[in-house]
Amino acid sequence: MGEIAKLLEAELVGDPAVVITGLSGIKEAKEGDITFLANSRYLALADETLASAIITSKDYSQPLRKPVVKTENPSLAFTKISEYLWPQGLYHPRGIHPSAIVGKGVFLGSNVSIGAHAVISDGVRIEDNSVLYPGCFIGGESVIGRDCLIYPNVTIREKTKIGARVIIHSGSVVGSDGFGFVNVDGRHQKIPQTGIVEIQDDVEIGSNVSIDRARFDKTVIGKGTKIDNLVHIAHNVVIGENCLIIAQAGISGSTTIGNNVTLAGQAGLVGHITVGDGAIVAAQGGVTKSVPANTIVSGYPARPHNQAKRLNAYVSRLPELYKTISALEKKVKRLEERK
Figure: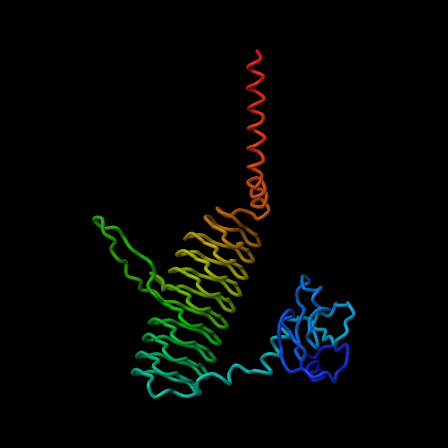
């Protein structure tokens, strides 16, 4: 335990000689594991867990019968220990597999790794230390920055620009055609999508995400934004920095998302609107008009969260109100019959 506290530069309360052999969640932990407590909802589990030690916040004061490591951010500290014990880079492909296809005019920086059956089209540029897993396709004239990690079966279409330290998980498609059609004589005629996608530094994209290329100019994902699995981002969408886009969210074309915005699971946004900096769209929120900065909206159509909660409360009372009105109608009818 003493070594862990030293690694985290944290205060240790308890026996520094306790031996830690693994990491686990507070419910699942067993003897020898270290766990963490970052949410007050799990306070009751601190005494019940079988873990041999717990990482907590600095203000944690509840006495425990096991060592406690006090940190500014328990979740981050737990991550740091995990990365120290099991560095992910140990498992990534190394070198260029003989079955990989590398086109003409491709630039590969130092220490680039390309897995089996990956296809790197003509004119692609891949910077230092980036790793492409088996089965990836990189379209012509695309650029991938340094220290990127592209997992198996990712498709990156032509002329896509990807910054440094970007992670893209399996099955995602970056740069697919935007959904653009015009009705001509009763038939849907395809509109060419001639723009690109730009993914800026430190973005992470989950599995089976689709990010469409712009009709003109570019679709943009800003620095530090994290995108969960099964998200669709349409053509000409611009997402700011450090946003969180959660599973199954859908953003229609030409919508602009500010910085530090959160779109919770299954949120749906119409096109050509703006979501201001720091706004939050709650799960399954249906956004039909622009959202001001630092606002929480929910429901369908999405409205300020407190207003939406009141409306939900009113709706939940409708069966009771129906019974009350039915009883009143019967009383009125009886009174009228007495006249």
